[in-house]
Image 1 (cartoon, helix red, strand yellow):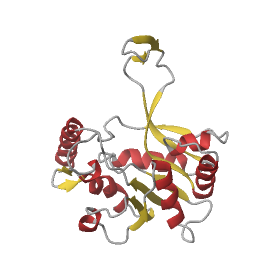
Image 2: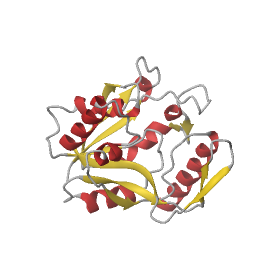
Image 3: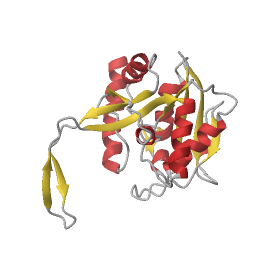
Length: 230
């Protein structure tokens, strides 16, 4: 089993409001992106990693791990992912696995990574970690009032990593961009081509940092995980 890691990290985090992008927020003595990279860089199955960065990123040079390839970020997430995939041209084979993981997800349990890899190893296309929707869901009417309660049965929250074969993922993103469509995740680009990615249940602790409150939750989980491993 071998895979390549792609991490889009060109966002500037306007909503985060901490004076620096959220992937560079400090979390238990390290940046969020260092925590996000750690499960992969410590995994012998990972053949290499590419991080897509904003132009003139002032933070990355101070924490860049040895051997990680830097690629130019794009205007949107899907552009950053495609640029990172282009950086693997000549390294990754068409049927190699690529895992795309958010730079702002520092709490990926290793058991979830192992589950994703083992469940999809023989899959022809790939899939993604996801969590079943647990809360009651409401649809907004556009005026700040409830228009509808949405049936949550069968609904999942997409997580990362998302795991797909190199060539089909490149094609799906190219086709989306040619049609001037911007997928919000890699699975959606493949869905637009008629594919049906597999859903692999992952843990709800695999949160995406969007606020200071999320940082506090992430710190608590990482502390608990560290204590459990002692």
